[in-house]
Length: 311
Image (cartoon, rainbow, N blue to C red; front, side, top):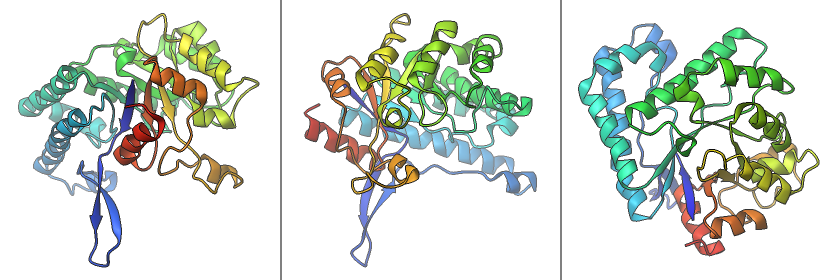
């Protein structure tokens, strides 16, 4: 059974006031588009940012290994402003070797790597410009996985939501006709709270072969006439043809917000206090990998192991 960590490793720090705060030890650096366009960054500064971000992930791997965490969601901000600086990256042999090293560390330690491009990655928009930008974003993630030497398979998932509501046929067309193989071979689709249910994504799967990442928290808000068990197994079955272990997500509403607004109920809680029975049974039977989308990151993941007996 594998619980997945999402993007960060946090550790507590006590301030002089006695207040405990949690800080991400994966100290990524960012670049701002406005400053870049104004010429505020030198080539050396951009390169140093990229090297730092890869180095930080190389340093993280021993933490994952020592805590037996075998699924890790990569940040989408490894190379900020990638679209403007790909040639710089391609010329940097030292950086490419570091990426290769990072990939080998993941593979050699049997760590499944995934990613989750942002909410604006919409490949079925009514605006062609939005689709083109979304494809570029997906190509960036595929480039990163290729440079790390990760196989082109949904085992190393590039996971997105369905996108614009009701544009199911355009979603199918974009997947089948517009995505390069290194994207399409890794692509997965996740049910969400408003636009695409498990039932709808099953239709997309039948036309494209793209498997469904079941998010049990999102499902609560968009059931589309299905039970939790039916939605679970429907999504599970979409992975069988690829012969890869299904990837799923778990998060909760923060205790006390159960009767709150939609926004309050959909926000992810600090920890995991509830796992649907069907998802928990599958986890204990080692049928799925489960990303823990809690704000407490590794702290919540390790606590979940204890609380739900999934050592």
